[in-house]
Image (cartoon, rainbow, N blue to C red; front, side, top):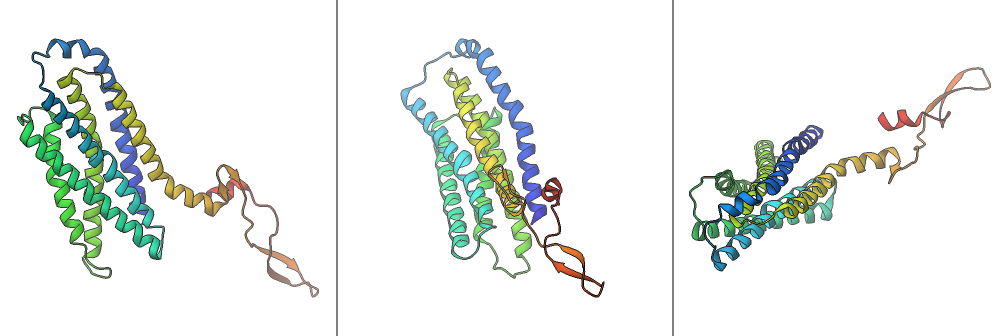
Length: 262
């Protein structure tokens, strides 16, 4: 379990290594290329097409940019719970992912019916791959073996890796969609990129903070106030017959830094 958490943390860190330069490039392109986009805007889009483009963006943001990462967070939270609360979080994960798949499917159908699908840009190519991958992931989720089954470990690894990759690539594709929207509509998208980056950053922080919060509670650190836990230690004391005995009592103040990193 610790290895999976380490890999998940590494995945989020790697994602930020790709995301931050990419978001910066979007902002730079938004400022530098705004006049060029207006120059290349040869025809006026119909109101229906504009409405369809906006709705497509909202559907895919809700699916790939919000519900799917939120589902990943809920199932991660369930690992620390037991009983009914754990079951409720697992069911919430299930509901969120189903809603995410349905919204993404609606966005895919809309793009097929309303847009030119020449696949000349990365947004369309990545989106096509994601549409197939999310349904594969949904089928894998429904085929979950029972606990104790030999195939359970293999299923967990496949479901977890595929879900993580889909979530990260889906978020990246939202940025490519923002860039495509800027070129198509000749509108500033800097605020959209900033707001989405803030939302994703908060979710990533919360995702990574769960393990650290549990660790800080164990170490006596709560909301920045260091409370060094008093743990019974073994001390050497002399009894009446000058023999050493072991007494489970505190025998002195331990180093607080050592307490934090033990």
